Amino acid sequence: MNNADHEQISITVSDPDRAAKALCDVFGWQVKSTTEKEKGVRSILVGTGTTYITLCAAAAIDHGPAEKPPIIKPRALTLNHVGIPARNPEALAAWYGLHFDLMVEGAFAYGDGWLIACEQGTPLTEMPAHFGFMLDARAEIDAWKQYFEEHGIDVDAQRNGNAIFIADPEGNSFEIFFDPTLFVAPI
Picture (cartoon, rainbow, N blue to C red):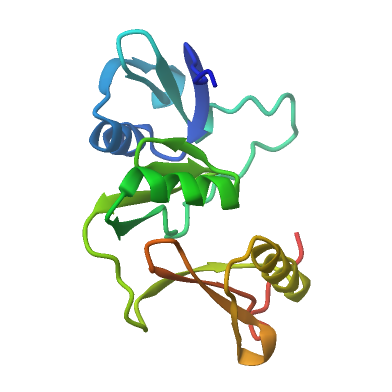
């Protein structure tokens, strides 16, 4: 199997400096250059000697002609990554990559704004230690339950089926849940 590679990718982020620091800290990359554009909008190139990512400030998005400029709201506090102890970090990252359709690099499984960093250590097998994924619809819980059961993975359904708990191959527990009391405004 060939490894995928890239020369350059551009992504839009709310804070290029913070994103660049995180990528450098996690992957050992370096900042290659910083560009100041009109109105103080920054872009940063970060990566290795042959591949890099351009991190563009959210305000740099070209929305085309509009009567009103787009409203850029400050980002709410969100969970970006979780560190999970593992005896075999690379194998565990591959397991999460397989089951959650994530990209995997060594001990890191990542995609769509989040990262699972598998770190050398003793797994957290004692409850209540766990992390959770929240879904938007109750039916999605049943689909995930069926998926894991079809793959021979034990599932513990709780809270009238609104939550399922699964243990990864190292014994770390995670939850997939739907909160029927949470009101989500339609977009």
